[in-house]
Amino acid sequence: MRFNGVERTLLDFRFSHDRDTDLLGIPCTYPKDSFICVSFAAEEGDGFFLDWMCGRSAANEGYTGYWYDGEIVFYDELSDGQEFYRYDLRGVMPVYFLVGYNQQDGMFVSLTLTVNERIYNRFMGAEFFYLYRFWYVEPEEKPQKMLSYEPQFDGYYFEDMGGERIDKDTLYPEQEVYLCIETTNGEGEQMTINLEAPGLDYEYEGEVLGNDTLSNLSVTDKLTRIKLKTLTPKEKSHSADKRDKHNIATARFVSELGNTLRIRFPRVVVPEYVVNFETNPNTYQGEFGFDWYRKEWRDPDSPCIEGSEELKQIYTPFEIGVKHVNSGESYGTYYVPWLVMPPRSTVKLLLVSDIYYNHSDTPETETLILKSESTFVSVCPDELTLYECSNGGAEITVSCGDSVISPTSITVESSTGAVVGKLNIAANAEYNYYKINIPVVYAYIEDEPEFGAGVIDTEIGKIGGLQSIEDYLNSRSLNQALIQVKFIYDKDGKPFKLGFTRNELILANEGKNINTGEGYV
Image (cartoon, rainbow, N blue to C red; front, side, top):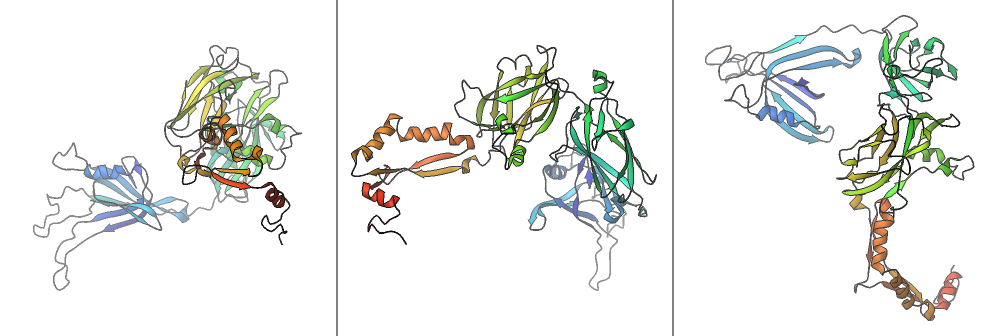
């Protein structure tokens, strides 16, 4: 169903017609009001329908509601989504709006529309009764198309090595991606794809593609995933004009049946540098959580072997193709650090340029743009020069204005649109649930004054008392995982006490009953 740019998938559709009958059950009126009743799953933006029904019409000031044209279209699942029937509706207005709930569909909206094929007045016999401000609905039936079993290209998209869709309009050399092609009735077919790429070369199964052509690829399922590696093209330079061009591939079935598919490759953007998010060692005191994938974990001799691949995925890796200034090797995988901060808080970080991966000739004028994915998270400043990020880095402020329901991120892009850095920000909506009550217990030896209860008070007093320990845990320790603690005391507001003698301690260490001195069974 579509009206005024708003589209909903219907759960239910009814088109009702009505005639009155007399006491004998014989129709005694012409066909009267007809209404279309629909229902659909509730979602954001449903206020449109209520405004549609209740709003004051500028064109008809004496009436509430707005007249809209629209359509209701029916599709047949067996015909691959082909349209087989539709209602083209003109001058339509809702007269009933309901939000409900059931276990099967969850929250749903029911809507009744004032669309009539015929409107009669039983007394006047008029075809159009002036009290009704309705137009006609004109159902248009389209002949159902015959099912086709020819192979069909339906669409495509790109994924990175982690299975995430590439939503940025960029590729760069030395990057591995999946080209995912969707087909219908293509199983058993073969396809050939001419990449026609002026800005990149491609490698498939370890071989550089001759003439940029993938030949005789087997289609084994509705989704065919093709792993490609981008390469710097031989005897071609990445000039600015070439980076702005898009590669258009053409996919055809080898059997020459079915359609062809034009595949638009992302724009080629070559990053010239890399920047990293870091804490300021001169000011950071553990007031927020910051975790990164340490370089020592990546070394071949690292003790972190078991589970290392799973660990890497926590840092949402992606590839950056900028080369080392000396060795020429690609930077490779960028592991994104995590920032943990409570709602309505602010932290300060450093954005630091990696001097070993910096090929920019104009750092004083090269601009980095910091983009926050969430409206609840902001970063200031949101623009910096590459020069400011050198020599120890530039200080930035990250603010969280409200609870973040799901993990989000801040992305750093160069002036050419290349992603050169990224920061993950953990969800914190359940911050108030991460609270732990900790009973404070003094455990001491009763018959040895040097280990008695008084010693505990003395040592705790040296660091500011129990409250200072609680404050430290909540502001410079457990708070890094959004955990807050509260110390619990006895009914008099004092620590619980657990005293024992030296002999009881010896018996307990030997696994014996401290009351009888006998061993436990």
